[in-house]
Length: 201
Image 1 (cartoon, one colour):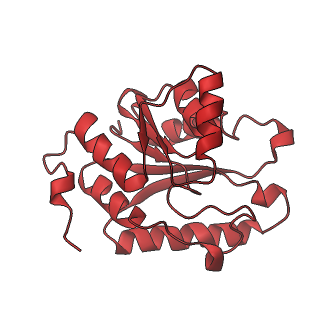
Image 2 (cartoon, one colour):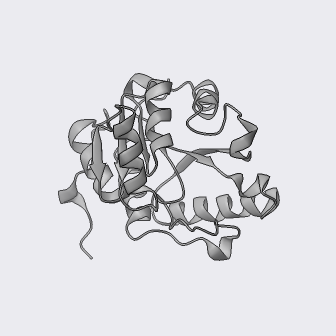
Image 3 (spheres, helix red, strand yellow):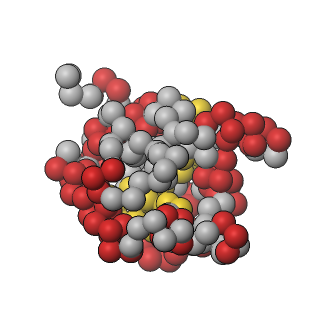
């Protein structure tokens, strides 16, 4: 059974979000420190699984082949930086489709659990929107972290407050979120990472 998994949203957590959507690999821009944070999480024994809504497909703004190219480029860059993305699950639908795979629906998390036999009682979710935190809660993740690095932070915080939901942590970005995970939800990996173990820049 796969333990200590960290589910990651993509846009606003790993890469810069865009009001015009990320439609190609050329438009994909890693947020500062995100590759390093994923490498540190990987070294510390936290398998990384991306769970992302990609209505850019349903809107006809890009093709599935281009989305696959974006995912491939993202994975390759993370591996070059010393990390590893175990898997990626995405929803291509529009909000009006009312599918269960679009977050805050939990179908993508359930699919990941079935595919990789994940222990949700040790898993966490890092996202930049209210729907990420709601998905984490509904799926039964052990914890959730809301980051400020996306475009939706203020709206997310207000929406969650209105619904009486609180993330376990509000972090500046993925690197800050990783630091908190190391302190509060360490894996059983003897090489557990910490802020002190970051390579100097």
